[in-house]
Image (cartoon, rainbow, N blue to C red; front, side, top):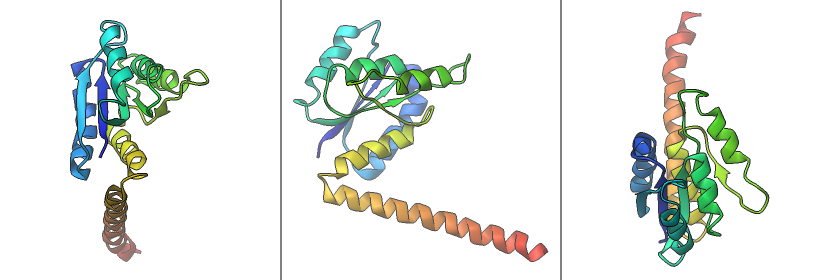
Length: 163
């Protein structure tokens, strides 16, 4: 199975990235995580992106709007950007930057601090060629649906009996 590459601009992104790595681990997907900055270590970020396909990666997750675009500019692998929540604009600036990539350099974008969804989208991409992974994703969806229906039954029993 191909690996998922994870690139974060700073180790301060670890709480969000852990949501991604926990999800990937639960699905049995190999990954490799790095801290590279599009501005402070541009050569390393570019080298990672340019060699990712040859190094066994199938998808790259990048946290930081500028970093996702820089990675995408240097690979034809799918890149998923996770916009970072900020103190000034709550991440809206990062969200807009991530979705506004120029034509020809696409970056898929998940929610602000959406590490788990970035991992799930990576899994869905990889599952196109991995039937066992596709089955795990289907089972996860079914388990998630079951959990919601159990909560519905509990809330309905509690509140609807009050009518």
